[in-house]
Length: 225
Length: 225
DNA sequence: CTCCTTTTGTAAAGTAGCCGACAAAACTTA
DNA sequence: TAAGTTTTGTCGGCTACTTTACAAAAGGAG
Image (tube, rainbow over all chains, first blue to last red; front, side, top):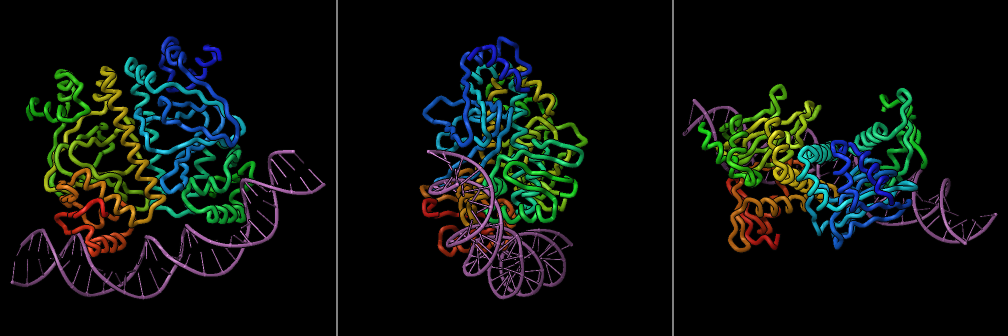
């Protein structure tokens, strides 16, 4: 892959706006690039050097597996999101993988150590990065409190609203989301059983609050949801 | 308060080890210092300039209140912990306060903007700080997955173990924790009702796994817990 | 078009933990 | 030491959700 293209892939991300051309090139030299298809699984092999990944196109989910084999969806990532060792420390024991949700995704990555070098040489990037991680944490905390105090219905609704606002195509109060999640996925995200999720989705559809199928979700009036 | 003393308060924290004397003094000029007693409530007034706080002595809990008035314990902090606008962004709407749990606490604080200046001028501090925030996020994620997949009993046990390892006095397999939490606090931390927490604690005591009273918790053999 | 796999729909039985209510015990204050 | 307040103990009813189980529908592969 040409350096020129790689350069633009990074340059695109707002975190890297402050960097000079030469600094980005420095990262680019060692940048990896990868395409993958729906259903593919990407492991963060612990034997490999730790990396930071940037999702350039498509959607993936980060799944973690605990000792008993229970799978939890940690995050749904969309175009422009960073993932991997964001805390800049590699923790061996955690078992996570990424699964591709959309037809085609492209991902680029760079070595953690190179990124650290860059951060040390570029304090304002470090500052942006810290804010970025902080923001991520904040969103996480928010989800977490939802989980604690709200019931499954409320969690589902707030997830759908959130999704619509992040990715949906808006026409007035109407939102159209291209649906790359199964009901099982949605259930895992809002932390409930698949059956409950199905039940609640059908209930919302019966009340004409949403229109659901495997390809898309349409919210007629988001303010009524 | 003498600059000299303030200096040492900061110097103590491992995050600030890399800083030179003059850099710390720079922060110290505008450092605030505060003592508080059990039961006191410290508000992060949004009208005020955003600050970062460092807990020097004692324990406090961070409580957030949602629209309906539900209170959730976000964090229990101990000596040496940083709190406040760690993400370096101030979010007005979130309603949080800190409540003092132990007899006497001391807290020092500095302005967010001053800290940012320091970070920009000191890349390696910025890197440590980023890692620190990242670590915090990781711990958070861990708690969160516990909440999702484990039942109340498991959550209580892992909370007690964690507490013992962080703060308890160890003698072989025996741990003694000085208990500054009520059962209501514990319940809120592990996200269950007070009644359930009481029940489970008594159950653990009946099985002789722990000895519980208002002043201390003794774990006879942590490996059996 | 047919077979196979994945996803979705539905129902019944079981349960963890919530909620309300009240009493006992332990600290606090005067 | 008495009265008030906070914390802890205990009970039964309730319900939102899980689990198990099976069938229908939709997609995909050959």
